Amino acid sequence: MLRFNVTNARYFSTLFAVASMISVGFVGPLLSQSVATPQTLESAELDASPTIVTDGFRSAKFGMDIDAVRSAIAADFGIEESAVQASENAVERTQVLTVAVPDLIPEGGIAQVSYVFGYLSKQLIQVGATWSDKTDPEMTPKLLYDNSNVLRSYFMEQSYALDSVRSNAVLPNGILIFRGADALERATLLLLQGIYATADDGSNVLTPASLDLLYSADPNEPDIFSLPKGNF
Image (cartoon, rainbow, N blue to C red; front, side, top):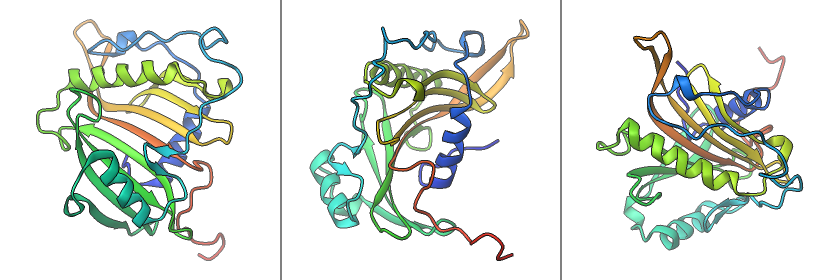
């Protein structure tokens, strides 16, 4: 099973491309808890002219360097510098800052927020937040569903580019709760991941293990290391 890693820009690009080809699907029978019923995405719900600006997350804006993002983390969450973990993605050769944030969603448990810096630019290219029992030992499947519904409702009220929006689409490893882009094709993705099992009535039931929220400056061509074609 593919598990999404919020520090992995390539996975985000790949999943975003797959999500672009998925039509909106009904997921009610597949869920062990209730997720908002998919709605027809018409102008009554979403403005066809995108006005949302996805330029980062809170005070951390795409294009910032690591020092500026460290300052943004302190301003947004009041977290000590020593609590911010720095690491490197050895495959993509990107730098990552990670921090644990309680109640990123009020009463939603502890989230892990990760900031990814481009291989060449050394600037912020992606922000991800994930909720799971690894980020919070008290996390439950119900709370993951509740968080996904809260975020979906929020995003559906924003003015994303109408033709970019997908909601409640079934994936092999979970549910694409929301996907949308702004006028510059900067992406927002909300994914509920877990394991499907067959219920007594024969229906497939999803037990979620994680909820991932991601923002990307350029999901189609992320600033990550890759070998030139034809070298091997």
